[in-house]
Image 1: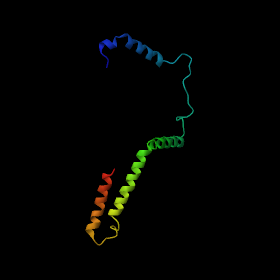
Image 2: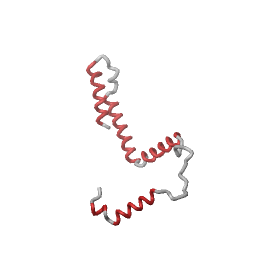
Image 3: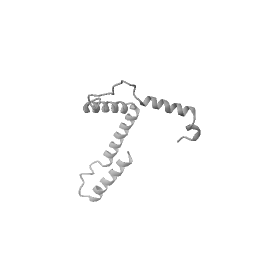
Image 4: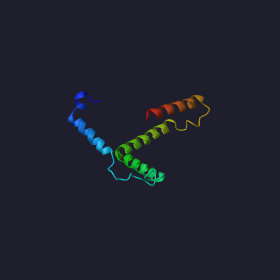
Length: 110
């Protein structure tokens, strides 16, 4: 929002003139025409997106290595805590606590 001083200023008026001049095509210039709607096919766009994701993802290998090592550590801890516990269906208390505790622990590590 411009106040009165800016609206009537030389710089503002000159900028508006430049915008008006630039928004009109030169006489005799044909408009742009493209053969297709998109510059690339859908498959090429998909590959480009995957490539850009790959570059961005591996830009910080230290972070990825740390995340991978934490995932392995959490997997080993869960494996140690619940070793052979799933096969004990006779004791309903142990089986009943298996699912909620593992779900809660997996949510807290993310």
